[in-house]
Structures are given as structure tokens and as C-alpha cells.
Length: 93
Length: 464
Image 1 (cartoon, rainbow over the protein chains, first blue to last red):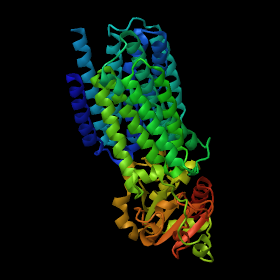
Image 2: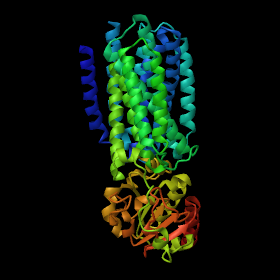
Image 3: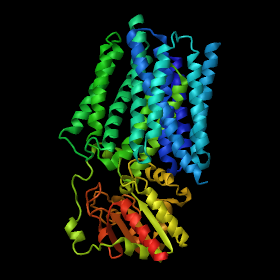
Image 4: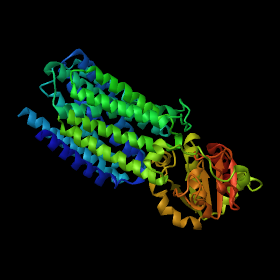
């Protein structure tokens, strides 16, 4: 049961870090914030890699492969599109 | 030892994500911050590949290549006006991936051991439920924003009852699975109920409420990733998911405040269904003054201070580049030009800012509502481009109005107001707007892009 308590602790502390950081983001950058935070939520990719690579059962492997595709789209498109937007904000410096 | 290094690398990746988000607090550092975040992701992926549990790389390469190609294609092709759909689509993929990973974890653990730790099972079912709802709900949102599904806020009778039943069903079946882990087929039943719930939840929500929906699902996709982190006992996922969850919730809250509505009201209430307010004929009859681009150009030529108020109509007409052209000319004529941005203008948080940035309008000209409202009384000409409810003075004056108490841009206080709009049709709140009939208002009934372009032509002729 120790592991779960530590995990919950990490979760709650990260929530506070998130609130602290995000409230400082100006409204001008709210769209890049959404796409950028979206990209990092594609961290699920890590779990997908383990599921597809471990090849325990046929079903878990297939689910893992589908998850890899979805999460990679999420990550790649998320970072790229955020970059495109932020470039526009930087141009007029 | 190897495991410890991998875990530490995950921690480094999580810290890089934190710096990535922190850098977004200033436009100047934002692009670099995004690169830091992307590098963190690369690090997390690379160290995962060294995990001893991974036996084969073929499928990983195949999946990765497909995902990367599709992702890059989507990201390079999307128009800035299509950004709300894009973010909705990405939310869908993030949520879907989390639900799938939870399913895979169940199927690779339970059949071999016959059981699993309680916390593992609970986390897996939370991840499944939230992930699947996010997946289907975001897809519906994206389809509505694309215009593939009618985006009117319709309510089916018994809507809330249906949603509640679906949610309760999904939770009870999840509990059943947690108590009887060998009944893995229940996982698919939860997926099914959650997918249906996502659809029925978003279907009745109309276009102008989409900023709230997108922000909320952004949060959910993070929470689903976090739940997956509990499943896999992986801190990188827990921390990152938690950050994104917080981010989405804050944005949701900002959007709700900007509409003076509660989250429950946005999700379950039916906005604009009961249009209480003065009838359109009563408000507009004989009082609306129509104008021409030439007349507006004359007005603008003599103005010292001009404020543009962009709305969804500007996005639809792709008028942002034309607006930039007009703003440049007014700049040259010595006028002070600013842009007043309402928090819920457009279809997602920050939508207008991105469009104006695309047209290379410097961001210091973009003013937030609270910043510009006190000075709108000293503005010579306010040009409203495709916005309606966010400039409706009824929000201040009529306590029975559906938008009563919603903070608005006090455009009606400007000396002259020009409203560029195709017709007098009501906005999302389905109520008449007395601003259009005000003494100091001129209506220019045109498409936003065409209207602004003709203003530019007229202004050029005047100043030659």
C-alpha cells in the first residue's frame, strides 16, 4: 500500500505546481498552452511502448500498438502545432 | 540499477515539462520552452526503449512511424482558424491512448495471475472511463467545430437522466470488474458505455460553449494520463498528467467566469433555449442605421483612437490579414490602434490572439477585457468584427437576460461604433443586441473580410 500513498502524494503536489505555473500564463498564449499541455499529456506513449513491446498476449500487444499510434500523433502534432503558433508570437519581437 | 536510472530519467523529463509550461508565461520565451518540453518527451521515450520488459521493437517502430507521419501531416496542414478542431482532435487521441494502455495493462496482468492489486485495478478503470469519454466527446466536439455535425445546442428530453444512467452504469460495471478481475470482458462494456456517454454529453452543447468543452477535455486527457501513471506505477505519467489536468481546469474556470455561468450550467443547462429578452423587432425597428465602407473610411480617417473587437465572425471569414492591413494604414495615419479581446471570443481560449498573431499583429496591441474596458469611453471608433454576445449591453442592464452578469466589452461607450456583421441575426445567446440600434452605432452588413478590404480601398482613395 506504500506505493500508492507515494503516488497520490506525487499527484497532489504536481497539481499544486501546475496551478502555480499555469495561472501565470497570459490569455494571449492560452491556445498554445492548450496544444502544448496536450502534447505533454501524450506521455501516455511511455505506457503504450511498454504494452506493445512486452508482447504478453496478442490482445495487449494490439491495444498497445493502437495506443502508440494515437499517443504519437498526440505528441508529434501537439509539439509541432504549438511551435508553429509560438513562432508567430515571436516574429514581432 | 538500470531501473533506477530509467526512473531518474523520467523525473528529469517531468522537470523539463514543468519548465516547458513555465516558459509559456512570456511570449518571448515561449517557443524555447516548447522545445524544452519536446526534448523532455524525447528523453522519456528513449529511456523507455531501454526498459528490459520490451522484447520486440518492430511494432514500436511501425506504430511510431505511422503516428509521427499522421501527426506531422496534421500539424503542418492545419489552418490557424482550424486550431480549435485540432486541439479537440489531439485531446481525443490522448484520452483514447490512455484508455487503450489501461486495457493492455489489464490484459497482460490478470490472465496470468488470476488477480491484481486493488489500486492497480481501480486506476485502470478510472483511466479507461475518463480516457474513453474524452475520446468520443472530443471527436464530437471536433466534428461540431468543423461543421460536420450541426452545432446548435439541442437538448433531447431526458438528456440528463440518460447521462447520469450511463455514468452510473460505467462506474458500477467498473466496480464489478475491480471485485472480479477475471471478468475482463467487462472492460469492453465500460469502454462502450463511456464512449456513448462522451457523445451524449457533448451533443447538446452548442458552438459558443465549445471553449469550455475543449478546456475541460484538455484537463480530462491529463487526468487520464495520470491515472495510467498509477496503473504503471510511473511518476512521469502521474506528474505530467496532473500538470495538464490542472491546466485544463484553470482554463475551464476562466472560460466559465467569462460567461458568468457555472460549469454545470454549461454542461447540462441549455443556453439560449428560453430566449427571454426584448423581441428583436422591438429593439431594432426603425433604429438601425446601415452604413457603407466609404462612410466608415471617412470616420476612421479622422479618428485618434481606434479599437477593433474581433469575434468568431472574423475567424469564419478568415479576415485577420485584411484587418492587419487596415490596422497598418490607421497606424500610418497616426491613430492609436488596439484590439480588445474577450476571453470567450472565438471557439477556444486564446483563439483570437492566435489568429491576430498569424496576421503579424504585435501582441502588445492585444488588450484583455479588464485592461481596455475602463478606457473604451475615450475611443473614437470601435470596430466590431463578427462579435455579438460579448458586446451586448443587456448583460449589464437586464437582470432577466440569459447573459445577465456576463462580463462584456463596453463597446457601446465609444464615441462611434461600427459593427461589421452579415445580418442582424442573433448570436449564440439568441437574444437581440441593443448595441446594433444604439444612436452611436452604424451597421455594415457585409462579410467580414470583404467589408474590411473595401474599407481599406476607400481609405486609400481618401488619403491619396
